[in-house]
Length: 199
Image (tube, rainbow, N blue to C red; front, side, top):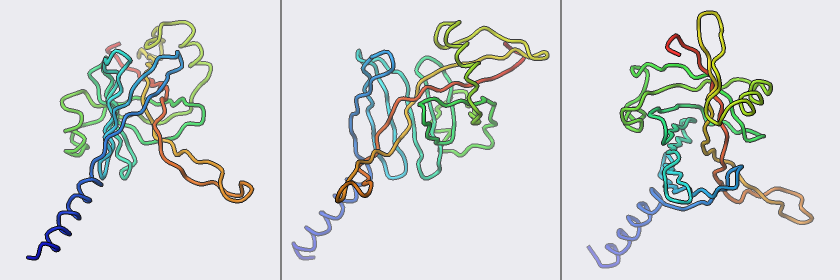
């Protein structure tokens, strides 16, 4: 093997490795003005994100599987794994019904990422602004009083996660077209609704 061939092989190998995993930091400001830092690791088939506050305390871990069209949210203050489809929201708010999801229906990849947490599926629903507004104004963030529905007790919960949005700018002569610039993560408020006998 010549020295030239060896150099080419090393160059190709380094290029492949560089494309498989890259890291970056993104600063995000929430709706209360708090500064959060997203530690993002880009891999070939997924993004792994750890969101921390300005003191370095964990807020949430997010695993985004773009090719499969879903993401896993792991809030720091609750031992749950919330599985949902990747959906963009125009107003920065998403609403879901939370349902139990049998582990037998999950891939080993999801089970490994959830790491023993209780797994729930978040099913998209239309956001009811009356319910959302009453939940925010009448109770502290995170929980709301129970409501009766037949023999069930039902709740709203609130948490923040990150969703990926494409960012584009005007380009071309006289701004005749849009050019894609990059993708960035934005903070999104998630409401999820669940009912059960145990509450």
